[in-house]
Amino acid sequence: MTQPSWKISRRTCLQGLGVSLALPLLDGMVHGDQKARQRPRRMCSVYFPFGVAMPKDGSPDRQWGWFPTGIGADYQLTNPLQPLASLRKQVTILGGLSHPKGRSMGGHDTGDTFLTGARLSGSSFANTVSIDQYAAAFVGGPDPVSVVDPFE
Image (cartoon, rainbow, N blue to C red; front, side):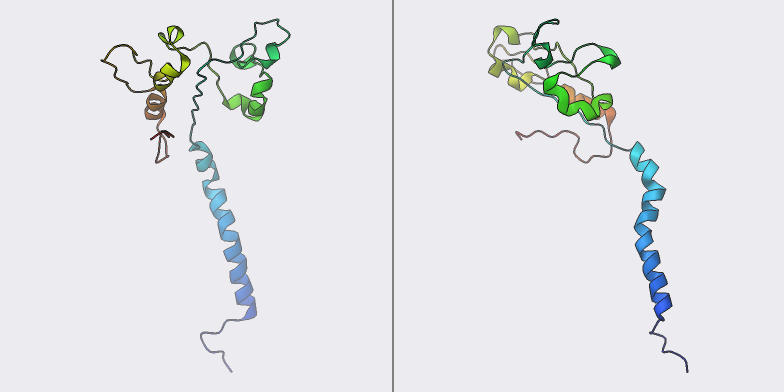
């Protein structure tokens, strides 16, 4: 006696389940290398309106300074930067940057323009493209949102 066409054997059911469980793994194997190459690049800009600790080299407090010691690929992270240790080879830390007019003004006054360097004096104030927007346009990528502004 033959089985009705809508019934399947236990063996066929188990084989189908095995294949369906393996399908997500196959997708990961096929596209894994491609996904790794398309990993988005990120940029984080941090503004300190009143500066950061910058003990001089040789000072006993140097390990508590914000900027790493050394330059180039051989830099050493200071204590405040230790949370970035696992990302060290993927992180670039820039220092010594300041707004040209910011030193003669209060730190709060330069917050709006710390990434643009726009002039702050007079009624002709006009902000311009910021360095993070420029970097996002230059690098490009698969992200639908290239720049996140928490104040908009």
